[in-house]
Length: 299
Image 1 (cartoon, one colour):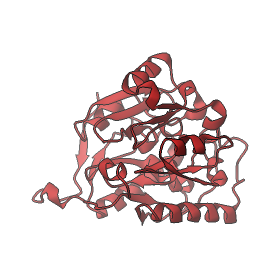
Image 2 (cartoon, one colour):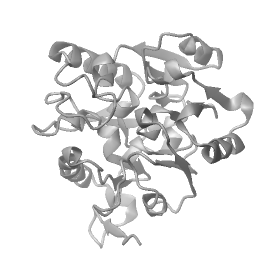
Image 3 (cartoon, rainbow, N blue to C red):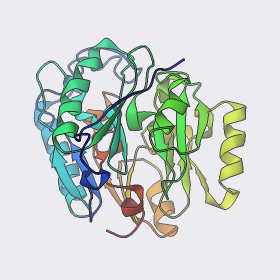
């Protein structure tokens, strides 16, 4: 049984009206000052120890930052030595309505990140919803709201614990659907599943078990499901940032971007190869702070 620990970021006498409110889509990013592949905790890291080229890392991150600034406001989290994966800030929390469910990372190598983001969120006025250490939960890596923010999709099987799903969803009293990941390459939901603003779902069916696919197909009709191939999935095709009609994604060596444009999306493909060595792409590098309702309309 999970003991609920809710740590207020506001004083007891304060009103919930004092929680952060945003008029534009707003994201948090963390510069890659200390980013490197220092260890292997996912299959993408294997063979890539200390391979990211520092100049290229900064150039790719800056390009993503500048593209995101064109369609959203971007806040910055100070990078810390000893936490090389802080750049993948979306893994560290899930945010909605001024409430932040802070991650409880599976691997000790990433647990040092939690305190730094927790302090940033507290200072910014967010209400913190904590998950006990023994219950693994990895933020937007494994929990994503649908386009209107009324339903939560959460994954388990590789990183996040199934028991965390209801606990995290209770932060917003929202329904949650659990999906079981099978393939260790797709260790997080955000690299194989992406609800889009137009009501579409970008996903890789091969990452899920049969009951999970049935849940997905029950929620999204065939004309709204965009199934990517294994090649596309392994090029992080689902790890996208979606703001209104805009999609920012890494480079994919197929016609996927054109297919998305054909559905009315404006797609920017960026080179993010150095971060893919560490197991993440565009989505993993930006944590949404504003409500889903803002991300689902034109920026």
